[in-house]
Length: 225
Image 1 (cartoon, rainbow, N blue to C red):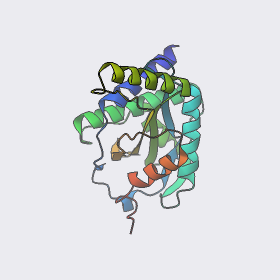
Image 2: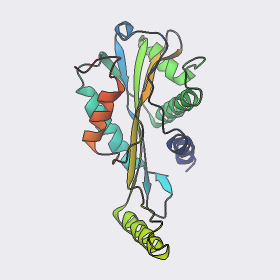
Image 3: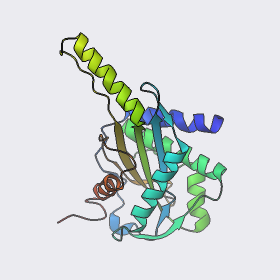
Image 4: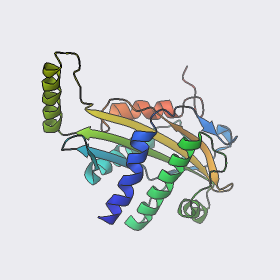
């Protein structure tokens, strides 16, 4: 239970407090300098709303999201990925998740990569493999059960009737965004950071995720003609 709580708290802070970061941030490292990039095991934080409007982290949905990102990134030939690093156990995965969430929170708060230092676990993973650059891609999203969405829609309709149509609350069915970081073990910092804005789309819609991944690296690793 403690593990789930630790992962859920930073997730909710980012989910509801940082919805507008779209600017690409770099440390000055050009895309052409990012060679032998290692794809780190994708991270996914998907919450499910079953009662009221309270999102609760869902391990099963998050695992599916991670697998979807992995499939998309593995097939993206324009990324200069030359290898990958997976997490060998749950403890390591937990440590990496916390460190990466902390990186994202700090970057989005200060809106710059200045003085952002890698956590010891992330740094040691790359150093142990003898690699300089690692790519982290994260999915953050929330979705509702069909019953919950129906119930909340009915409640909204009742409120609309009571207010004579002046106010009709419409529940958001789902929200999704994807974040990407290129970490630099040599300089112990983040070379690239960008996130998509939250959109009212299902987090496990693979076409939505494909589009987000393409947008993330536009004008860094590639330029769409």
